[in-house]
Image (cartoon, rainbow, N blue to C red):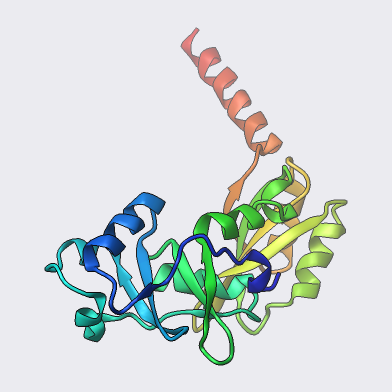
Length: 217
């Protein structure tokens, strides 16, 4: 899960003496949102392809004041890259070593392709979002509630942290989990969203439908 294990090198970093037009064209060819600039092997910064298109002809060095200084260390975890992709609205992130030497890059597609292999994303199952008091939150308790209902927890992540409450999104192994809903509520949790087929709700809807038809006779 280290960044260096997902490193690519086919998209080169440019020199400050390279032309703006050449860099813009290569970024468009690769479909990447940014290009990277280095000087004597040291990473200097990035420029967005859209910014390059609006810039006058010349060398990349003339745009030095606009360089965006974002990068990720080769020893970082792939989870650390998510914030960079979002913060800088990019689909490609440069990778550097401890001396800030440019090593290559990681792409958004490669990282999310890796995530798609994780059970939390790849396994079929149900998704629940539950809310509880921040002081009450216990991962041990959450797992116990799920497992006590003969289900398995494939993954969990915190989707919101407020002053008085916390929200958790859970991926669970079974589809029909109304009993888990009830257990969470009994332990003081609120089920905010659920994405699965609730057999009890379906049964109530069917019965209500039959009742409506009965009234129409």
